[in-house]
Length: 157
Image (cartoon, rainbow, N blue to C red):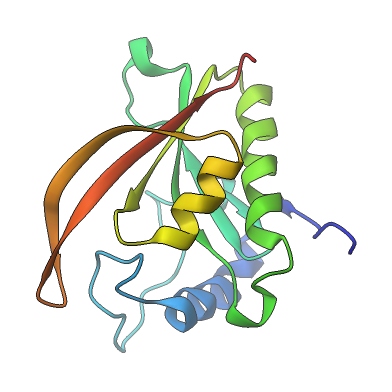
């Protein structure tokens, strides 16, 4: 199976990414309420296209603005259309995030995942991420308390 084409996002992707975000919303991975009309634009000043890789999407950012933390990048969102699941899109996005993080000079890549999202956790582990911390019961989703799991990996190996 050919690798998905990963590219930087463009402003013209706004509508398609907003629709994807609404399509894949689930309490398995979302802590925000289900999107309801009127829908906000996908991109805004705090979330410009330069933060995103597209084929589905992955948001890659500095976790803080602190200079002492500038060697870290964090994945803060990953979505793949249901029709594209099982085709390696999420894995390709993760690998592209590793390469982009290295290109930006980062030494570490981190992410947060809900404890009950077993498929995502397995994928991240298979790509070299390890659990580095757990905030037990951090979120109340659909009447259940769910852990917030911090995962990370080195980019220097």
